[in-house]
Image (cartoon, one colour):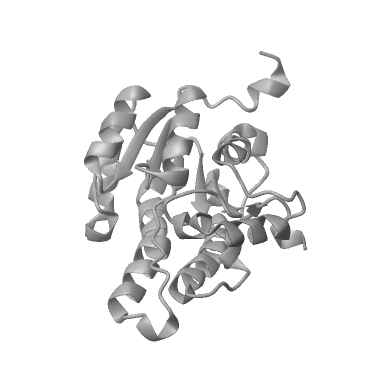
Length: 249
């Protein structure tokens, strides 16, 4: 492998991926394993991640992150299978898609806790063990900068993720721990199933992009591998839109 390609190598690193039972988290777990990382998968649906972990020689931990009370203890648990993670992808998330008048304190708090609070507290718990540096990747959204119907808590949380990413970078980059985020456009996942089930809405979203199509999960792999690897050694505090040019129009 020449020096330029070696900078993209993540073989042998330990990656922790939350929300790994479906959608973006699941796809990235397989992609990082294929790139040679040792992957720890976390999700509340244990059966789904157990099957995936077996297929990629990873390790599954069934955990509802909303119920974690001690993230330092949880960080020790996720470090047991392969050692302390040097790569963290905070992909767990929820979007209840409620009209404003139907939002309750419970759904509001659950959305902000899982989408915004958990990435911070989990990252903070893992920072001390990233002795030789690491890369944290948060999942932002089109709704980090745009408003969409029936998504006020989700939009608030994802706007927060963008600023959280910058603040985490400011706090920890001097320790060699980079924090960035990807902001996907419209991709087919469980969270967006209702959108893709409506062919008119899906077509309208595709037309809004510069490329004229919605995303495919493989479109996320290259940007994430870049941010995980030393190829992005001088990149931190950034939100990378992977949206086919949706936000450019």
